[in-house]
Image (cartoon, rainbow, N blue to C red; front, side):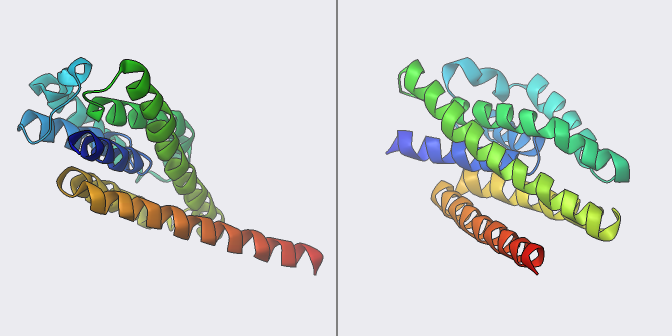
Length: 191
């Protein structure tokens, strides 16, 4: 059961990486530093003061940068591969007591995949906001993403089962919204 809960924490944090790359890593580092989480042996560096300081600075820079109108869209192109890598790190760091092959497979496929899908959704949302509001709505999108990243990260560490249920709900509603958007575009194209 411990292994499953650890993986759920990792997957919840991976999903949060899709909203902001460094927020979940900072929460993971804080939780590991305080002794709340146990990390896989090769990821114990995340529980150091140096990691906390570095991730804190990176988080502040990332969060602030998303409020600069032209920079937010540029950051989305860079954030997509970074979110996948962060998702792999968060899931891999929590994959304890299993073979390296299995832990890395889970980290890459489940962790990286989850972060990549969420990041693609946020990039799409920002693009739609940019086109529909001329970029004026992007600070609202950035704020929602930040709150989502912080909330999901904290929930993943404290209530991992709830976090996974939230991620599944997010996937479901996102897929439904994308389907509706595609159907509207198809109707407009045939009209």
